[in-house]
Image 1 (cartoon, one colour):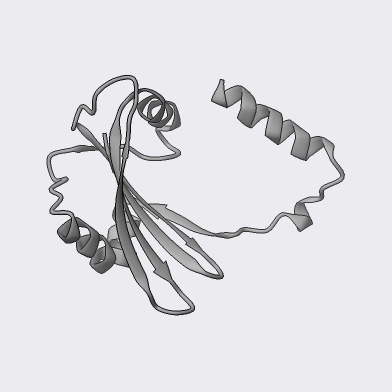
Image 2 (cartoon, rainbow, N blue to C red):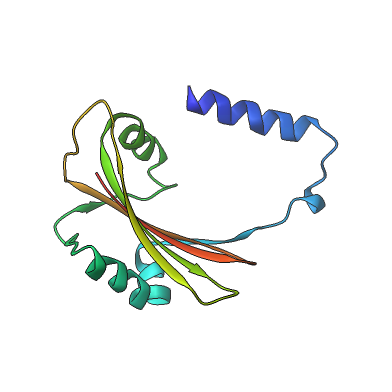
Length: 129
């Protein structure tokens, strides 16, 4: 169902009078090794704050394993740990959230990724499924 919605949005964008020059990149997305290279200190702060040990969990990539990622999000309970850096003020917040799915959290998979927008925030997410 979500794939159909995404396809509908994409078709709407392509059939309107939007040119590609009007579409601009909003920020940088990175995960796994790139994230460890660029923001290892921030990731370690988040891991330490919530006493997380993700070393024995299998990594899931957001885009490269999109179908599996979607299955995990749609079906399984998971915990999300979020690190937000507000660039203008230098303020950092760290929070955790529980998501209840139809199936229990298997404690087998982890997603670690960052979206760094060009203007205001850098957001690092760790999701444990």
